[in-house]
Length: 187
Image 1 (cartoon, helix red, strand yellow):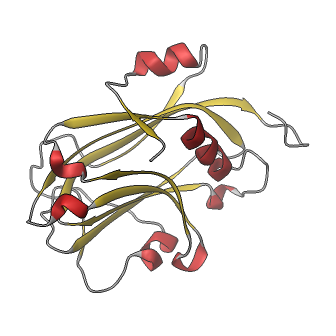
Image 2 (cartoon, one colour; image 1 turned 90 degrees about the vertical axis):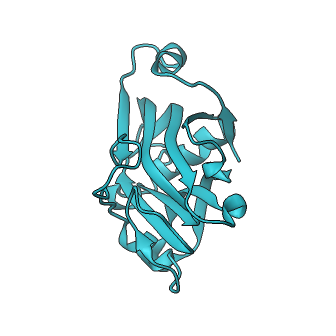
């Protein structure tokens, strides 16, 4: 959903957005699922979204009907020129073929989840996976960063959610932002 599977690399973003630095948002250590577990820091809205009934876990932790969540504060009032997600996941229990790694923004009170992208069965490949956001995904992410000047910094939060029998080693989001927006909302 709104992703192009690719060997996306930093050079791709640098080429698409010349003279723009990238920002890296990351969680978990790239340590091949080594313990101790790496902490995650879900936003209050994501915490409210995560359903009761399954344990909430950190990176590197095997999951059986569990939930993983992490959140990142994005740049505010910026358009997104290019973005890459990169992660490593693997199945940790049977029944993981319907699991989803979903990312976007959870509104106050835990609903709705404004989805930017999703990878179904992320643990199918026990290797680092890279995806570039397509034009629709970049537009949706730009709306979350407040490109229309309708978001405060505390509303420009990127939420990552994984359920239920897949474990995550690490997650990285590389974002190349476009120009700052003007007071009338043009960028």
